[in-house]
Structures are given as structure tokens and as C-alpha cells.
Length: 116
Image (cartoon, rainbow, N blue to C red; front, side, top):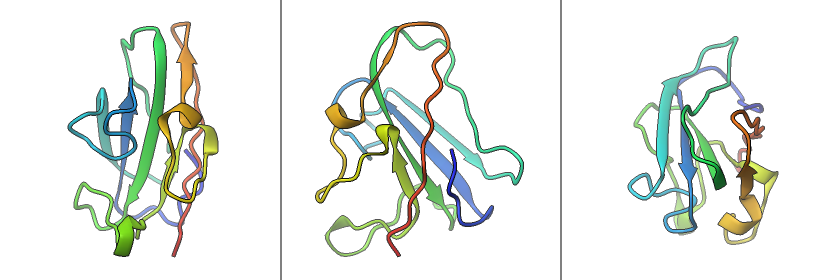
């Protein structure tokens, strides 16, 4: 992951196997990862993931409340990124963010963006 404006707070990463709940519903995510940010390393790994199609969402949880803070109309107040570097008027769609896992190791870069 890249693009964090500072090393304060934490990072939440959600891995989805289908469109239901994408991009932000932790209850429907296939896997959820949360960690504090450390200056030297902004990477993480999901182990034992079955082959298939997935999409990833990541957010910079600057205030460490373990959720993406949003304002009016759901506009993020913290940094957020998705696989595929997709941007849409009404948020990312699973199909546009999807990637295939067809081998044991797949690297996906997520760029964190801030709207304010």
C-alpha cells in the first residue's frame, strides 16, 4: 500500500470474494485485516486464500476507531483505496476492482487517496 499522508493510526484491509458488501461491509468480507501503521512497512499478506476472483479495500484509520469515517452522502473523511485503482462517482464496483488469484502468491498494490 502506498499514499498514506502520515504514519498515525491504523490500516484496515478487507478482502472480498463477491460483490455483496463491497467495498466496506466488514461482515460480508471474506477476510479482514487490521493493524497499526508503522513507518517502514505498509504491506500485509492474506494466507491460505483459495484460487478465485477477489477485490480489496483498504482504509487509513487515522483516529483508530476501526472503521472508515464518512461525512455527508458517505464521502470518506479518511484515506481509502481499492484494488485496480478504480475511481467512480458513486464508489468502486467489485467487477472493476476484481483480480484473479490463480497461483499461491499474487501481489496487489493499493494506492490510498484522500478526498479532503
